[in-house]
Amino acid sequence: MDSIYAGDDVTFAIVNGQVKVSGNSANFSAVSNAKKLAVGDSQVLVLKKDGSVSAVSLKGNSTSDVSSWTKISSIAVGKNYVVGVHEDGTVSVVSDDKDLKEAVEAWTDVKYIAAYNDTLVAFNRSGKMYGYGDNSSNQYDNSFKSDAKKLSQVKNITFTVTTANVNIAWDPVENADYYELTVNTNPITEHKNIISNSDSIASSSLKDGETYVVTITAHSKKEDKYKTSEKTSINFAYNAKTVQLNSPTDITATGLQNAWHFAWSPVENADKYNISIDGTVAASNVDGTSVTIDGISFAEGSEHEISITALSSNPAYTESVPTKAKMKYTISKGKIKVNLEKPDGSGAGSKTYELNVGSYYVQNIIKPSDIPNGYKLPQEPVSAEVMNGQTTEVTIKLEAN
Figure 1 (tube, rainbow, N blue to C red):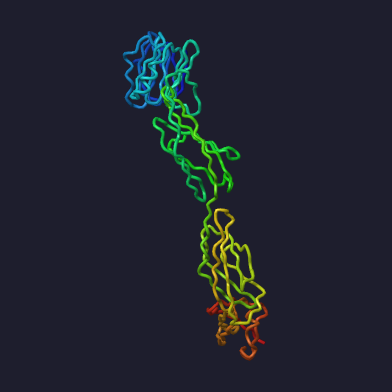
Figure 2: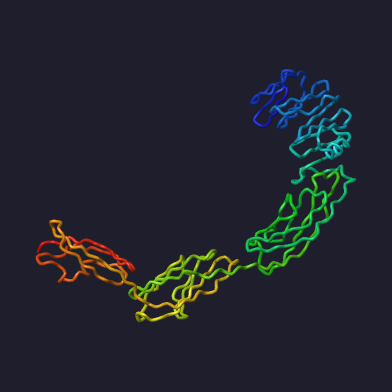
């Protein structure tokens, strides 16, 4: 085995000039005298011992026409392009990208070349580095760009503040492919590879009233033609945007014995509520949308001012305007219908009792005069719930005296 190569779900080996394949059905039977391979996503270049090159499809796609290449010493395959280095150090390119072809074919005295996706790099015999394409992660330091034109500075930076973000926009720069943005937050905010002329940073990374320096530079993937722009820096005074919560609605009140229960509809973005009665705080930082105030000693039928305010732990929202309502403290009532049953299962009549809302033991409700002669209530307690404006029905099995 002379050499091995790996691609996407496929491996290759050159054995005595023949190409062996595993993981793909590509046909290399017509290839002989192979010296080197360059593996791409859709095709493989084969450099032969006589300096010629052939292309073989991996996925049934068309291949690059390299039939005219001669005296090739090195090959590479990238995204939508193939390159070959001639023995004299010149470079041939097959690509629909005219800028790439023009730039790379201007390279001279090249000895080594490599490609991946949109990035192409090379070194000449004196150690000079060439590069073309995506350099967003500083994959190369392009020495061959003495005639490159510097991109224009970013201009007309604007800011739009929302409760969640600060949106930053600027005029697009001609020939720029991406932008880099930094903000001197703590820690520093750095956004790279911004492909549009806008970006955003989270409001949570900023402090209200602080002034920050925002810096933006424009970059081109064609570094042989366009240099990175000068930095554009601008001061930005951050004033947090706040939104007042809506006021609670649909307040209801249920009078209980020595207590008053309140409920209301949830307010969007609120997580706490304050409740006051007649200007005095009765409950604060209430979770949920209901609360029971105990210790009420108001006269039944008395009128009181109820006030409920929505709050939020998110600083982007301020407390609501209180919702105020005049309400009468009226103890809510319901009914319990008690059906009496004799030990043999036959009926012994029924009685209905009107009571304040709450929980009761039925044995404590029934009057002695309501129990038929010769019978008594069971000792095991039976409980029932009285609900506002409703009748709760329960059956009691009597015992013989």
